[in-house]
Image (cartoon, rainbow over all chains, first blue to last red; front, side):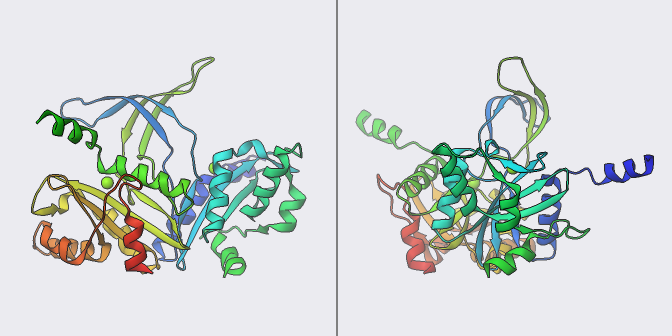
Length: 180
Length: 180
Ligand SMILES: [Mg+2]
Ligand SMILES: [Mg+2]
């Protein structure tokens, strides 16, 4: 019906938008200090018009060498990457690249908390999966294995994040349970 | 002499460039995972030409809501802002803004290690100063106090960072001493 369409539209935010609102909630309530990193851009040309703001007129997107989000929670370093997929059955590994996975390995080895947040957009389920599993599947893929992580593996080894109004994607509840 | 000028030129890198090289050294030697955050840019218009990379044709610089650098060292969250000044006697507070100082307060209260790295470009001295002192001077300024932190205070309460070839600005040596 039209009504359900409207409701769907209301909920049609990307995972990134919902996470940004969630992080703002955590910040406002003094629960955690976690931010999205700005999109990395290579700036080639800038105009400096009189009496108005500098205008970037030529720039290109660069590949991120780290992850989307990092910050601080209960004294611990937190680092994660967020991914959406329209697949109902797998998370394709093509959504990641070498530098990111290397970064996540380093974070784990230096004592940080590192994971991915995966949204299956069709079922709207959102999972937290520790980075070690991504690292494992990434290595397998390199030696000729699967090009994706099965959803069943994510359900098994990961944690379903409960969704609500405030906060929208309460991943700190999972972190409390799993890492502390 | 000309010779000294050449040497000076060789050393004419900005604090930010030197810190980026230092962080890369720390990363390559698996000592720490600390990165500069990308410059925040508000993207207004993007062209998608056939057969070549997306080109940003209109964008503007945004004010950073956090600090320049963050990451992970010996299991601890690290966060800092780097500033250069040509003044011989003070660090002007106009180099900072409210959001940054608020962010630094939050980092400290959540158990992170937070400081500023200040370079006096004339003397070439570089100091690490814990964020609590910036917070103190920031509050004083708001109630009508000085608009800068005297260099003498930075010398007293901060730590001179030794400079070398590799790593260039060895601030982890100070962190080891002060925070562990
Ligand atoms: Mg992402
Ligand atoms: Mg700076």
